[in-house]
Length: 279
Image 1 (tube, rainbow, N blue to C red):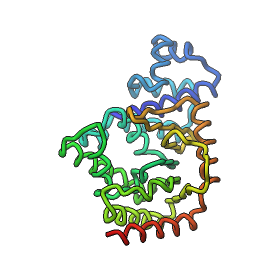
Image 2 (image 1 turned 60 degrees about the vertical axis):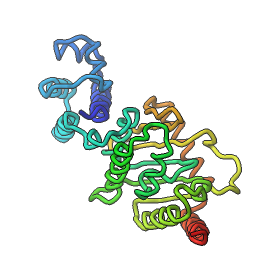
Image 3 (image 1 turned 120 degrees about the vertical axis):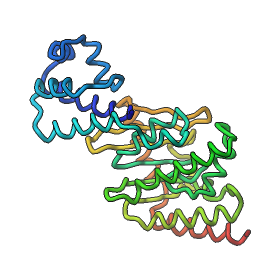
């Protein structure tokens, strides 16, 4: 079951209700339930049945295009997510869920190559060094899940990725020089896609807008967005509008501080050659 899809559906219903001038008590009366249940539906904490959705859309005067889109989202929310069979950490599942239907991702990494750009060898070394599992089977499944996520970059309507990577992440020898040379080759291949932009935050940039850690910001076709903060204890989703706006500001500041994409590409090439010289 997709909790992210339920939250997206709930957000749409909230906006429709407010635009139509109704409060949660009005919606509860139409459904024959409490206002508390309506709040749960709008927060994505409860499953909404088709007849409940139809009743609310009738009340709000939604047009046919909106009805079709929301009913499709309701059906998608009931489907099993592909990631559920890959033993993805529970704290990471919401992010993968949201990422599966986002239209754009902004990613900042301090010490690692962004997950969507990683090779299998690099991803394996990262998971092997982590504290979440040492089970080779679990590590292998999580590496496979990362490869599955990368398909979003090459599908018919691909995810747009704008990544800012700290120079240290490019120079750190994860798995040794050969693994890093292969990894940076792959980053450069990803950069050839029109929907992928990679900028490097060089050492010379000095202090920057996100010194405390990595984060991602996912945007959707309904102009909603959610953030994700990565910490040594795991990660958590950020959906408070004020916090999301703060992350957008930080992302904009980082992109303005980082090298332009063409200059970044040449720096990546140079660092790749340095890794190759050590093999």
